Each structure stands twice: as C-alpha cells, then as structure tokens.
Amino acid sequence: MSKIILNNEKLSKYNWFNLGGPAKFFFKPKSISDIREFLKNDNKLNKNIHVLGAGSNTLFRDGGFDGTIVKLGKEFAYTKVFEDGIIEVGAATLDKKVSDFAMENSIEGFEFLSCIPGTIGGAITMNSGCYGYSISKYIVSIETLSLNGELKSFNPNQVKFFYRGCSFGEDLIILSVRLKGKIGIKEKIKEKQIKFIEQKRKTQPSRIKTCGSTFKNPENNKAWELIKKSGCRNLTVGDAKLSKQHCNFFLNNGNASSSDIEKLIEEVRNKVFLKTGIKLELEIKIVGKK
Ligand SMILES: Cc1cc2nc3c(=O)[nH]c(=O)nc-3n(C[C@H](O)[C@H](O)[C@H](O)COP(=O)(O)OP(=O)(O)OC[C@H]3O[C@@H](n4cnc5c(N)ncnc54)[C@H](O)[C@@H]3O)c2cc1C
Image (cartoon, rainbow, N blue to C red; front, side):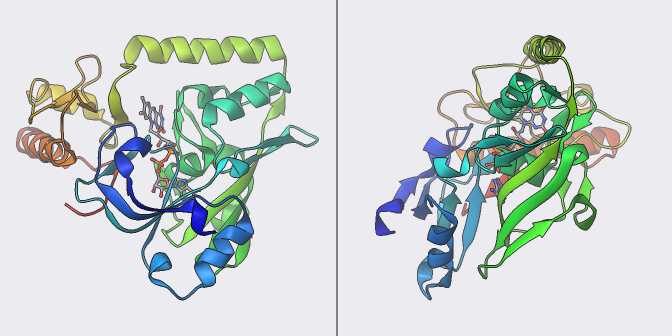
C-alpha cells in the first residue's frame, strides 16, 4: 500500500483553480480493501481525512492540508447497465462519462451531467445539477464506506438532499451509486446533450481556472445579478478576478494565490451585503490551512 501514499503532494495539480499547498499525505486507493487497510491501521495517516473528486468545486488553501487527501483511483471509475434504465457507476467516474454511457445505452435523464465537470462522488455530495435537473432525483442507492470501515448502502429516503448539498458528512466515502433513468431514443438524448453543452458554452466561460459558481443562488435571487448590482464585476485581488462572462465565476487569472481568491470572495460578499442586505453563501468548498 505504501506505493499509493505520496508525501507532500502538491494539491494544485488536483483542482480546477490550480491552487493550494501540499497535502501531508495523498492516498490513491485501488480497491475497497486498500481503503479498509488504511483506515484500520492506528497511525497518523488516517486521523484527518478529506475525500477529493475532480476538484472542480474545491479551493485548497495555500498552506495545504495537514492530513490525508483520499482520491479514489481509476478502479473506482466504471459504468454498468442493468434492466429498466438502471445504471451503476463508480464514484470516481466523470459526470460526462456517465451522461455518454447513458446515451449510448438509450437511457434518458442524464443529459445535464454532460456539462458538469466533476465526478459522481462530487455530484452526490453537492447534489449537482443544472437546467432544472439535479442528481438526487435519479438515485436508487448509494454505496459508502464509513471511516470505521463499515460498508453501508443508502436509499434516497435516508439522505437529505437540498440545493447544492446533502446530509452526508466528511465521515463517509462514497464508493458507487445506482441511478435510474428512462428508456428513450438515443438520437433525441444526444440532441439534448448537445443543446445543454451549447447553452453552457454561450453563457459560461470555458478554459479558465475556476470552480464554477462560487456562491449559491439565494432564494428568489441570482448570485451573479447581486454581484453585478453591487458594483463588484471589476474587483480584483492580485490575479484573482471575476469572469467577464459570468461574474459568479471567480478565476485564477494566472498567478493568483488561494488567499487572493479568498480575499476577493470576502470583498464581494461584504459589498453585496452592504448593497442588498443579502449574505451570500459559498457553493465552493474551501479546504486546508491558510
Ligand atoms: C466550469 C464549471 C462549471 C460548473 N457547472 C456546474 C453546474 O452546472 N452545476 C453544478 O451543480 N455544479 C457545477 N460546477 C461545480 C462542480 O463541477 C460540481 O460541484 C461537481 O459535482 C463537483 O465534483 P468534483 O468531483 O469535482 O468534486 P470536488 O470538488 O472534488 O469535491 C466536492 C465535494 O464532494 C466531496 N466528494 C467528492 N468525491 C467524494 C466521494 N467519493 N466521497 C465522499 N465525498 C466526496 C468532497 O469531499 C467535497 O466536499 C461547475 C464547475 C466548473 C469548474
């Protein structure tokens, strides 16, 4: 197992902002028994754990992470099809892969996943979605491993899902999920995927270092509208900026530090509060030491 635990691994390689200091330990398990072995040993490695997907919603701080980052290996990225529009996917599978796999098997419902850049583990944790769809509506069961090594299966009624989140804590590793769509027509499913991808391309920036929407939309409001209305669009801290195309997308314009991004987040949050009385809540996860 020692080969799959790295020391002082740079986290900037593993997130969409390309930011963050090193993780003291970085663990890439290949199997459930790898994880169990890691968890049962009484050592400093498993005292402070954070599970990472594709890092498309995570800002790692400059001081890195004083514990172990667990990133499921490629063995946890797989797709299987069952009867009645049910698919099983490993937690490390990219959302786009799931969408394509469902399309290839003429299963509709997962077209929206084609434009979310994370993994299925991240999508479940965040209850990700777009264009009126969200992953929680399709769940049949979720397989998890708790930090004391117990496998547990959840049905969707045992988990609370809400806008960009769910009731799972940091003490569970999502291993796989079964999702149910509807049998449909492959060409129509493909068309819908393309429509969503095009729609995203028109309204959101691409090929930038960002984690997408930084703040959640408050009830009856759009975060980007509040940011614009509060005169924040051109604010910068070092190389941390807001996207011109979508001002709720914060970006590392080249040489920003995580602390620049965090300072900009606070500045925008304060300005929006002063102008509108609304306190914006973070959608992205901020992890690690300052
Ligand atoms: C350009 C861009 C566009 C985006 N558009 C959308 C959008 O339209 N809709 C939307 O909802 N989001 C969007 N996002 C945000 C992001 O892609 C989603 O939140 C995504 O689901 C995060 O997945 P991830 O694997 O990258 O998660 P990460 O950022 O790696 O982690 C996010 C959270 O999930 C947890 N997690 C990840 N995997 C596991 C696991 N196996 N077990 C337990 N916990 C786990 C982490 O601990 C963390 O709390 C966008 C991001 C970008 C960069």
